[in-house]
Image (cartoon, rainbow, N blue to C red; front, side, top):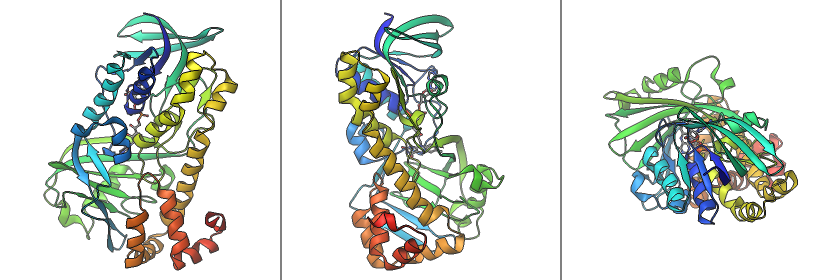
Length: 400
Ligand SMILES: Cc1cc2nc3c(=O)[nH]c(=O)nc-3n(C[C@H](O)[C@H](O)[C@H](O)COP(=O)(O)OP(=O)(O)OC[C@H]3O[C@@H](n4cnc5c(N)ncnc54)[C@H](O)[C@@H]3O)c2cc1C
């Protein structure tokens, strides 16, 4: 079969989810994946929020549950956010998770070609014509719509000249055995020497732990991610926790956390990392990608049915994404205010404010990984010291 309603490039979680939602509505979907298997290689800490998990029901892929975070200031002040009775996020096996999401698409009628990459795209009056290298054989297919779900370095985005994500972070992670930590709590470490401008993490992962860090390249001052993770593991305050650790795997990858200016064009849509949707506060990209697909699926489906996918129509379909863009910008501004643009001494002072019982209570009642901006704004409104600093920094608009 050579004629499809939609060709989706990339069988990651977001491409798989788009295939699932559109195939469920009866559209003929072809998914292309450059690798010979789904879910490998991956670069991910494996955190999937309950909200994202509810969308796909893949609980069998969960390795552990996380009820809270222990966060450490650069000087070692610890605060614990969370309560033992509420799961804040899940840690999944990414390979099984990605396979499960793509399987939902296939079970609803989508077709998957592995070892397949597009090499050329042409737009004709009747639709999209895509040339594909399918395991060494050149094939041509046509479709009404092309979806780029092909990750941070998206071929679709580059080939269709759709710009670049507005912010990039670099993330690095190793998997270790022998870590001395709690099973259901993730740990976050801050400080210029371990994760300049953001944080390093330790995530319980069933029998092992995932240790990683992420940062904006400009903040790394020429140092590598590996150096920062080494610094964390040899830090005088924390090295005892890592004393018996043995590394079993390592991953590194980009995190695009600034939505491209126009994630659509005539007969083209970018989703997930290809569109630059990861959260500036946590780097999580799976939840926002699922949310994006859900926001668009109804209008997109009826436009596919009517074969009405002009630039004007795509702009209208994608209008709900402006809310996601504003949310992402707001989260970034708050992240910069609380963490990224702070010196270690200022950050430590923020921790002293976070550590007050009334502030911990506020965070526990309003904290939601999916909506960090609302917590940030609540902190600015309710904590007088933050309010003072925010006003000084010209953050008056945040109180509106
Ligand atoms: C160190 C690190 C830790 C992270 N931790 C988390 C986390 O805990 N939680 C979270 O939600 N997010 C996390 N992220 C981000 C997360 O991995 C991504 O946001 C998520 O994978 C995006 O999904 P996607 O489907 O858009 O893209 P991807 O997962 O990148 O999938 C893209 C797919 O397209 C395929 N592809 C690419 N190019 C082509 C091509 N030309 N032709 C055919 N196929 C192609 C790829 O092989 C891949 O299968 C992390 C990222 C890093 C780097």
